[in-house]
Length: 102
Image (cartoon, rainbow, N blue to C red; front, side, top):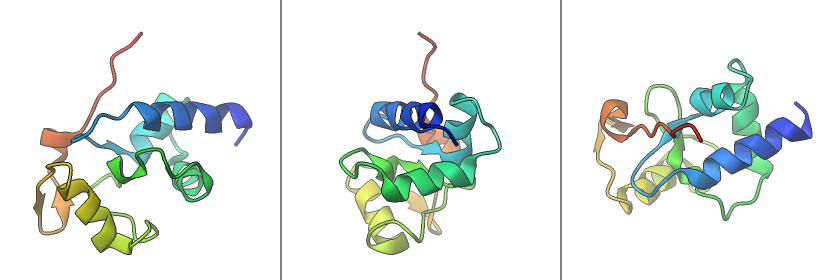
């Protein structure tokens, strides 16, 4: 992907509010490449870790094994934000964030 896509991904992730999540695919679609969910995940591994990457989950509300601390660390960071889990997954209907258009 080009630098523009990467920059758009970083901008979206930076906006995800505390206590809410977005999916890799949702971010990819908002950034103009709906089939680039894996690329969003790759960006998460190399990008600025001060961004709220803990708020990015898979399409079923599951945690990322590649997250620092693994699945457990990912879940713990979200629990600190007040997000509840059922069988290791988030209820996306409750916690999914939909950014508003500018």
